[in-house]
Length: 176
Image 1: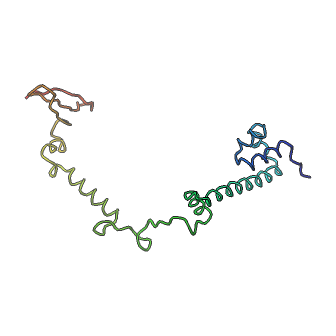
Image 2: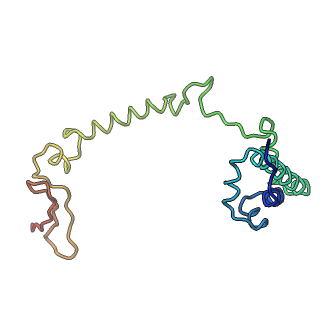
Image 3: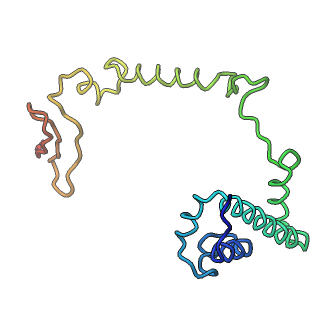
């Protein structure tokens, strides 16, 4: 034999139909919010709550429909998409024709373009193709010079950043 719902459970479910949230219903029924979650162990309560939830959603939908029909165009658009997705949902194809690759400039795929970029980067990183100022760094003959900058205000001197034998970076001033 199934147990009946308590008065507090009835009050909570009635409040839930009106407000649609557990917190709001708990406040309105003057019960602790966590009681609802304890009650969900009871099969009869769980079935009753599912019915109250469906009623609450219907109430909200009726109100939204009423507002939408009174001229709230954005709400009407959202309701139309939600209730009739096959008719009103946005459709986007993110593949190429026939489900194939998307062709990019010159008829090349993104994978082909990435391969070309990698090849060019590799060619630029070889000492024979690098600009003259980087060649000593790339072929290892520079004693680790990373960059040079003119120091502000001191003519004839430059700041030089280099790495010592233990790999730590150090800065020194070099005078011409």
